[in-house]
Image (cartoon, rainbow, N blue to C red):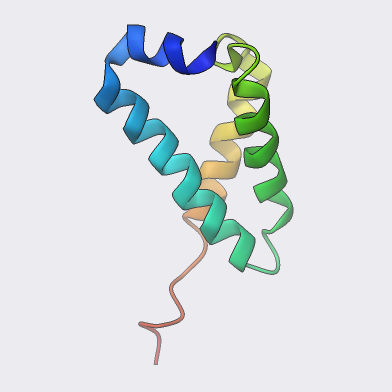
Length: 81
């Protein structure tokens, strides 16, 4: 199981940090019109993570980090004037 692998590698704080970042990015990407397809990558990663360790597959990790970095392109509309 993927979540057990993360606990073994970095502890519970590492697990909370990684999943928190993924969920935060998922929400930001889902709200964006242009980058919404990247949220599908994160949803698929989270769903597949419960049945198998995805952190050992480099191709899946590359797609996950691309989706996470795409969420940094989304700007908050509340702070813009």
